[in-house]
Length: 128
Length: 237
Image (cartoon, rainbow over all chains, first blue to last red; front, top):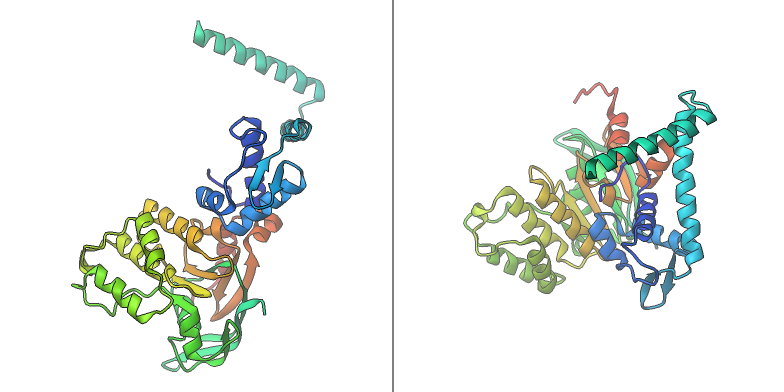
């Protein structure tokens, strides 16, 4: 993956792992690669990976089992909460961007509905 | 003692010219640090001083708590450009030279790194491409078991695939408490593996900062931060 050099790398690694879990590339109970292996795969500093994993462990997303490694939590409630948080974060960003363009709340809802409808139509056309 | 490298009040002149003036620098065990600065800023000189290869400096340089030149040579692995070997030397001869000269050189580790970087040992020094020669230098440097590794501009003029492989081998084979100091005047491709950057400007250490702090405090890339420090400089040398 490619990192944005303007954003702390540990934060981007955390987001990368969140996404892997949400999209099912990492499943509950699965062991994640060792710290050094992750660092090599992502071409980042070992200390930075350690910091990201440390935070994921304290958030409960990962579980550290002594001598065995780090595993994705099997607690579905924690995963659901994380997904919810990410969705709110994305909506917040979109909302603020539109708000800064002087789009009203009602207009935002209207535009979003229209946008989704148009996308659906476009997809239907593609497959028909 | 947590600082593996401790430099205090270091000044160095060469041919009556000030190269470094009042350099103070502490590097903690385990850190990967980028040493940045323009060409001629004194990066290589500083590395040679830490390695115990340049003499006649004022001030003190401690490596792993010791100041004697012999201790520096034992504790520091410096990426030398193999200029001491004739161009017809076979690579396997260079490897056995390292085995003989450095008691801490691990042939096993060298073979692992050489396998990863796909170094071709059957050739002569003059037959190596620039990228292959740099891979060999990195392989030899990282195969010693030392406290400090100094990599002097390891990415000069080599293709991006070789660069990525070299960066990965640095991550893979760095011992947890070893320091890696890597110099470059082109930081963007190594920024993601650095804990800290040290910027040399006006013959001294202008600043030393954590890379993650630069990103979170200024929302700036490391390259951008580095350039902003050199901007407005009237380039009089």
